[in-house]
Length: 447
Image (cartoon, rainbow, N blue to C red; front, top):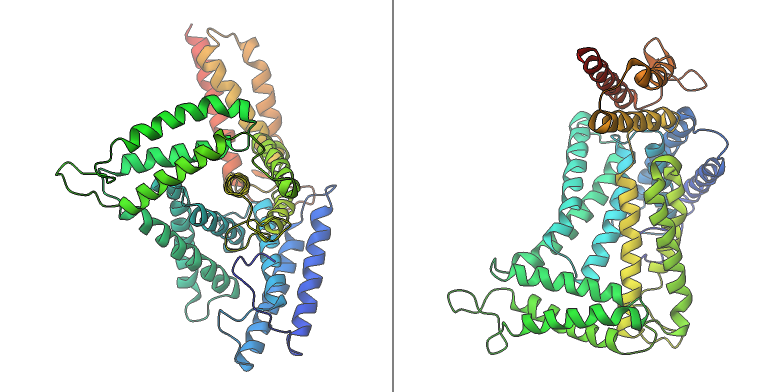
């Protein structure tokens, strides 16, 4: 379902059918586990199903090798179901706190690629926008290379699959970087200013005309000032030569003037036949914004699956990067800008939520969250509390002691006696809270 590249209509062979049937069964089991909000995920259940998936991947590899269909371009429905399974397992691994294991990276790579494709479609980005993705891809590359080194000549199937996704992302990153690399250092500030203006114009396109008009007028002033910098329609460097990167910068300037005209013209940015898509994107964005604010307390990483499905459905409506109306014609430019802006915003929010996932199992998250809150309170007390007596510090001491007493043989255990992921993170927080408390108690003694 989530292959963003076009799928060719290859049929399922008789040898592939048993693999497809088992993959559909695994996907259904994962969907049932995801819906069970009354219980924590059990690592043995998830890892057991994951090992079953890997067996199917090997079986598929053998079938396609024998049928000479083992090239990357060969796709059918089985690949789509397999991709869904890997994305779901990736979210489950994040929920279990297994962030540093290979399966956990898969859904992040899918989301990064979705962001790259939209950046490529719109052309509105700077090197600063690419940097967080670049850093994350480098981290995943180190993880994969270490895994390949351990596996030797027989890499695991999940490593092969994630490596392929990683190569796709690295290739797209290189293409995006190449676009900005040709812009001269002297022209780069102008380009970055235009990117900022273009983004603001896109954001204004989703607002009512009366609300957008004042800022649009200020952006118009800035665009005119940039346009006045040109000599004979070209940007000149300090040596009097034509600055490198004219195509990118002049093209962005002209696009910005066009979007400015659209924003300043009265009327709805989105035509009536595109309004349902627009409203759906707005609703998804609002929900993701709320999750970003409350994720530490309420987010279960597998909850992001439903948003991925919805966004993919909307993304699938585009043809050649454009949304089309009921007549089959591309939507107006202002509507394209508004819809693509919201779609990219949603993809970016999903990536932020994935990136903010702590390497702590959900069974340990209540303890983790309590310690983070306690640490913040102790920092605030240290900063603003002033002289404190032993009685003032007693509630913090009691709370810390009650959390510490949850340990068994130095470990935090789940309800079934297993040691969940994230012990190091939680113990670090616990020790930091003790250090802060002792500092406050020592300060009280000194006074």
